[in-house]
Length: 97
Image 1: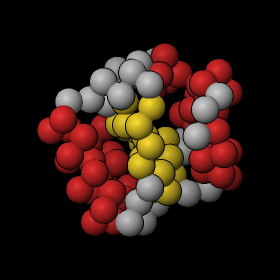
Image 2: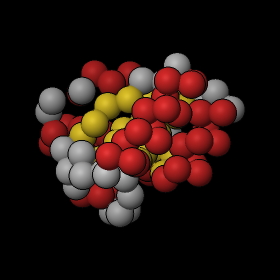
Image 3: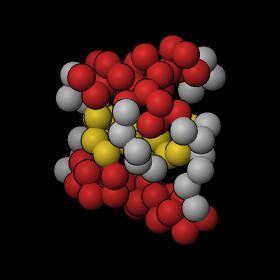
Image 4: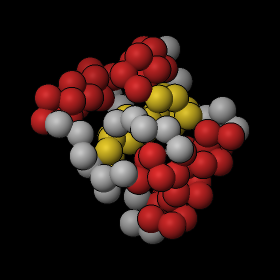
């Protein structure tokens, strides 16, 4: 995983409107079929991880666990989960993982 490149891509996702944050945002985007990848912070608790794993299984959505603090460092938002919407940035981000 190229963390430096991934941080840059996550920042671009935020600026281009291709990112959703938190449980509500990720759940809504997944329910509408808009989310193509869920990213979870490595510092998430076991319960939080189970919650997102269940969401991903139910929606057949791929999930990646990132190093602790990477999402916040890349986006400036203190959150545990970030969804990447289907679109041009999805393949770029997925290619970094």
